[in-house]
Image (cartoon, rainbow, N blue to C red; front, side):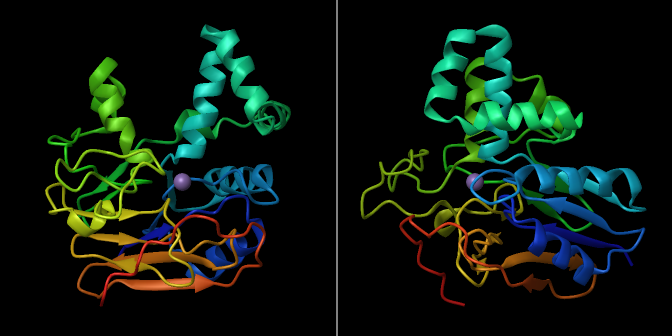
Length: 263
Ligand SMILES: [Mn+2]
């Protein structure tokens, strides 16, 4: 029976990633999916990308990388360099790691951004994998990655919120930028009604153990903050299983923690 293995935010933590892939013992009929944010914050982003690319070339199972807000930021930077160089210069001034990482990618000849996808829907296991979350105002979800890539303007902007949704407006369900939330505004997964199926997501670290909501599961256990790296494995007819490995703290945990759902 095939398994779907979904790995949380790696953020340049190569050693835990290698250990977790080893522990997962992935078979040819399985599929390995990343929730995004392979890069930034941690010690070895380029090492992680190299490892994932080499797995993709050599492993006998399929690998999918869903983009996180950090991949999205890199992609925007590369696009701006071509189309709006002045904006790219401003971006690089704020975040010098962008230019450095671009150079590293180029010298390694790596193109993971060309094959990463904005989301992943698995019919067999009936889940939708996104990096961040689903704002309550999102009424339709693209049926395919192709449909999503063809979106422009407002429609594209609306769907791009899935990379970075955390809190949503208590009344309207609208996306709130980090820091704009008030005490009454819920974390998106607390109020998500399951309209696009069960969602597996990263982005928001739930230190040391994954978070199970009614229609969503958060699997970023904060590898880069010392909380370990976690995979969720799904297999038909079996209960979902979490498999984790420990990690050393590289970056302190500074976000407002979201309370764990009671389960
Ligand atoms: Mn993220």
